[in-house]
Image (cartoon, rainbow, N blue to C red; front, side):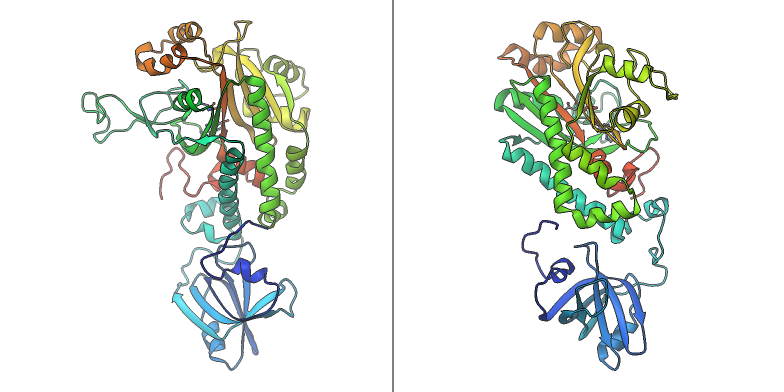
Length: 456
Ligand code: 4AD
C-alpha cells in the first residue's frame, strides 16, 4: 500500500480501502469511462490517488442517472452518495450516485480515448498523460521514492545541502554546459561578470560541506547539454549526491549498494499496486529483477577485470573493448544482464577517462572511481573517492589545463584540514527506469527536455 497521511479530503484511494460502508461520501475526479444501460449507468472516476478508479453506479429513474448518462470521458465531476459493498467482480466497494455535479466539461476532442495509446503519442500530450494509468503510476512512484531518499539519509544523520543551480564551474570537465545570461551570456555583458552555467553536478560545492559537516547530500536538478539521443539521457534530470568525510572508496561502494537496495525495497512495499501495472504491461521480468537487486549482493569487479570479461565474451559488441576506453551501455548491460546476472559495481577506472577530482591510485594509472550498473539500464550511479592531496590535485589540474585560479576555493579545502572523502551521484530517473521497467527516460520525467524537445 502507498504511504499516506491524512488526505485533505476523501480520495478514491481511501474510499477503496474502506473497512465498512460509508453513509455518504463525495468523490472528486475525472471520468475515465461511462457505460449507460437500461437500469443503471456505470461511471469510473479516477482522482490520481490510486491505480484503481472508483466505480459509481446510478439507478435508472433517478436524477443522478440522467446526469451520469450525459457525462463524457475526461470531464471533471463531483459525485456524492453512499459507499456500499460492490456486488460485481473487480472491486470491493462502489458508490451509489445520489448527486452528480459536472465541474468541468470535456469535449470529444479529448486526446485520451479509452484505447491504449503508444508512449510516443503520449509524449506529444505530456500535459495530459498523468491522467493515464501508466503515467499516474510512474509519478506516484516518483514521489514516493523522492521521499524515501530523504528518509534514507535522515535516518543516517546526513544533512541535506541545497547546492547552487547557477555555477561558474564545469564539475565534470566534460564541457556539456548550458550557458546562462540575461543577454545570452555575451562576453563583457555577463550578469555575474563572468560566464555562468546551469549545474551539471552539485559535487564540488557539496565537498565543501562534507569537509565541514561530515555526512551530507544534495538532491536536485542537474543539466547536461549532451547531444546524446539515447533513451537514458536527458538534458534536465535529478541527481542524488551523498558526500562523506573520512570515507574511502570501499565505504562509498557499501553505501551505494545499501542505498539502491533500500529504494527498491521501498518501491516494492509502498508502491506494490502501481508496480503491478508495470509487471503486467511493461516488463514481465520486473518482479524477478527487483528481487535480485533487493536481495542479492552486488558483484564488484575492477575495470581491468571487467575489460577482461568483455574481451573474452562470445558476444559481438558494436563498440570496441580495450583498456583505456570507457564502457558503453552495451558493455555495462552485458556485465549485469548476461555475465553476473545482477547489479555490478565496477571500480578503479583508467585515470585518463575520469575527471580531475578523482583520487589517483598508487599505480598512477587508475582513479578510485566506481560505477554501479543495473540490469535494463546500465550505469545508475557514478562516484569516487576524491583527491584530498593538494599536490596531486594541482598536478592533475595542470595536466588537464584546468585553471587553478578558477578553483582557488576548492583548492583551499585541500590546504585547510583536508581529509579523505568520497561520494557518488545517482541519476534519479535511471532509478525510476530500474524500478518501473520503463525503457525511455522521457517517460519517467513530467516534462522531459532532450535535444530539440522543449514543447511544454
Ligand atoms: O557519473 P556522473 O556524471 O557523476 C557526477 O556527476 C558526479 N559529480 C557525481 C558525484 O560523485 N557526486 O553522473 C551521476 C549519475 C549517472 O550515473 C547517471 O545515473 C546520471 O547521473 N546521469 C544522467 N541521467 C540522465 N541524463 C543524463 N544526461 C545523465 N548524466 C548523468
